[in-house]
Length: 461
Figure (cartoon, one colour):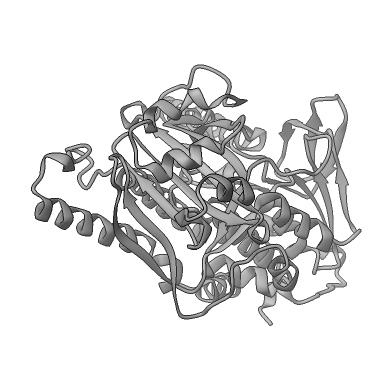
């Protein structure tokens, strides 16, 4: 059993730690569950919502983070809420179609090494909650406003309702609008100003506020019977998943909740507005007219799906500008608070799960105690920060590919003006690049990353 998942009790008074976790999404709960194996770490979870509920629809877990799920003992219960079968070898995962025309063209099938496990996000979170031990104390309606840390002594937390708390270390899993990230970057900027590096301080503060990716997602859950009634032979009913691609956006659809629902997401993409500010609410319920005109002349399969959508949720997809570090002293970020990324790789949740595992590993290590928390966090940072940002970038590039852009500088290909053979060759090249962008999910291993974390800890112990 990997070290991060052993139940360990350390008798030293210095080893007893009080940890506050801000945020109880998938990343935060996975971290709390992994850390709960260490009986001398007290965990308080502070969540701004009234109840621990997950907003969103589908979620995909690739083989790397699925290994963590298995190590945490979640596999059996999660398999009860998905029709995806665990396969270690080659798996047909998504079919890609050029769909911005009356007759779509299926040009590529993504074959992964190991299953992409598909879930309803709420089912996934509920499974985490079911496994969370009672010693993880949860506090709802607690939105963090700010924190203060000094070189020694406890970190002091201030919540929006005026209450306070203290801890030995603070973990920010509080999402893309993270208050903990604002504090981490504020500390770094203050330090830079104190040393006369004013331009650097200003640059650091540019990373506090999220930026719009130029993409809006329109999400809905479609009852399987509703699609069957109007399109009984629809491709989504009998394939693992389909992505319908075009120049101005794309649609992804796959079955979840044991085949009872279809997770539907339509993306409307304006790449030229990447890294700008979005005018309007980031999340709102809209009607189909908000996005359907983009897809009005697409193939019939696409229009059948849209006809089944009622009151979709519009999400303005925001990201975090890459930072130099996830850590400041005894405070660390994980998940969207650290690396909120576009969903074009289906890896946002998986990367949060990996953050959780590595962070629990370094904090639960026998050599970690109250006097050297910052050292353990630096190990986490050195491993997770560069890796997560590489995934963030390939996700951004995938968003270009899914709108038929082989060359970012040249923009979208006008495939319709090409002869059939040249059009097909370009689509095959696009498919090859898509699969190349995803190969890391099965050619790399979380085991190697865990071993590296332990080696680094032991080398500086």
